Image (tube, rainbow, N blue to C red; front, side, top):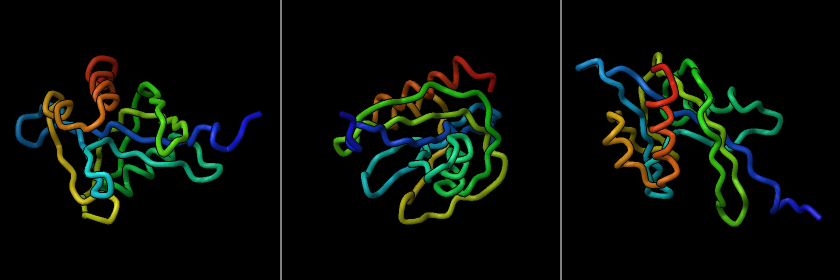
Amino acid sequence: MTTAKDTPVQAAGCVLWRRSPVDGGLEVCLVHRPKYDDWSHPKGKLKRGEEALPGALREVAEETGYTAEPGAELPTVCYYANGRPKEVRYWAAEAVAGDFTPNDEVDRILWLAPGPARARLTQPRDRDLVDALVCDSPV
């Protein structure tokens, strides 16, 4: 018998990127969540009935202040959070406009080149998404 605890929490997010205003190199946006004191990609739970891609773009806007142009879908990440399975679908997304304003959920963002971004990410599973962005997506 399947229970609510066995049903994966559905979430979505983006590996948000831009071209550096300094040298044109690739930069990845990481968000700092004070509640967990971690660095991750912008993501969040989907609202009831919400499709994954619109949800991912909504989360990017809420957490970073940026609107984004979605690109290729990246690998889905599955893990346990608070005793429940969680499934997060990700897309590569280019930041097109916006400005960050700190909020309760995200107090800082960083724009980093892929190598330093990989090193700063708290969860190893998030590092694979940077690799997928660099290797598998035409950015």
